[in-house]
Length: 209
Image (cartoon, rainbow, N blue to C red; front, top):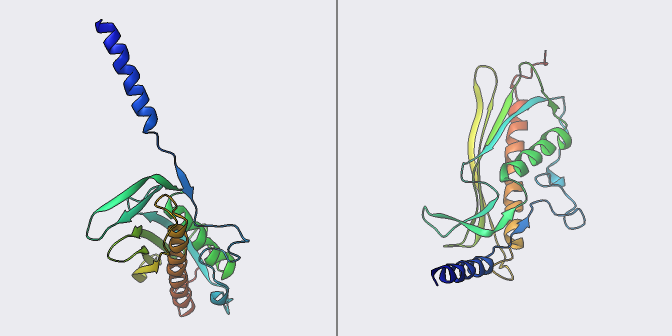
């Protein structure tokens, strides 16, 4: 009898676990070209070819420890939560690194330093989340530091929010992804404009050895 009860209990647990299965939905910040002709962070109006060749190393592009593939949200205050079934296709810093690289070295045609001395840009993604209260918005915060071998040339922190249009359902995060892409793109354009301006007005541009 005891063996029968154990078997029934195990079967009940198995059915419960099966009913609690989580189905993941993945979202990206980089829609198809048909949906968004311009790459993330490279708005056409902001692309200006430099008068002379600038040089730059794109150093570490990191993110806060809590930022992983789960989509994060905040209801106000200091508590951060995560949607269990909603994920990014990549870690947020991967989107940031790729978009920064495109904007600097493809759109602005800056020479990328891969060895030796020269100015280096380091970027940290501090916040990358859906703000649900007191307003519904995508919030991105980035800190960046431009340095040479001796001095910090430029150091800033920027926060960008973009309103989120109401999603069709609680499990559809496409509106969140769209707003997050816009916020990150605006932050990248602001960073790139500031870095190009600093490099153009006297920051050292040493030829790699």
